[in-house]
Image (tube, rainbow, N blue to C red; front, side, top):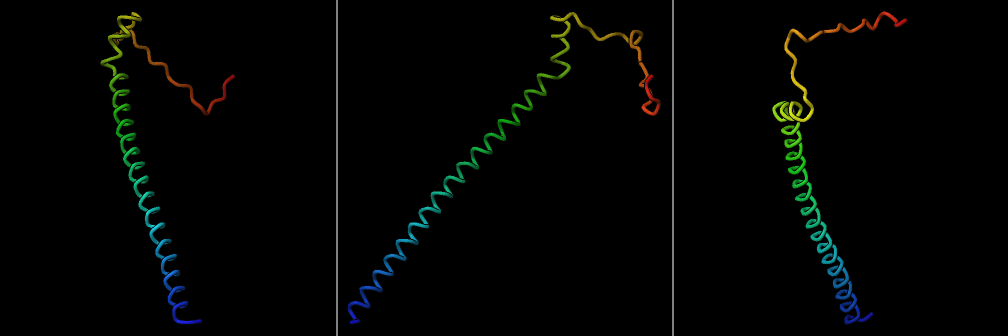
Length: 96
């Protein structure tokens, strides 16, 4: 092989390797961008989940449910004289 052929093959090899490196880096940058977008989406969904859980807690609180139960269902909290506490049966004794 002559000197020009060796130099041409070396330049061709360098070009192929440099093209591969550039392609791999651009692929990595694209994947990093996608990961960043997915992370932002996950954080937004977690914030939405926390807000919805708070809304559920507020909507299911006694302060919200008691007036609705009294107005629409005619329910009320009984006075202490009407509360009957029934003891639980002992689990050790079998049922008849």
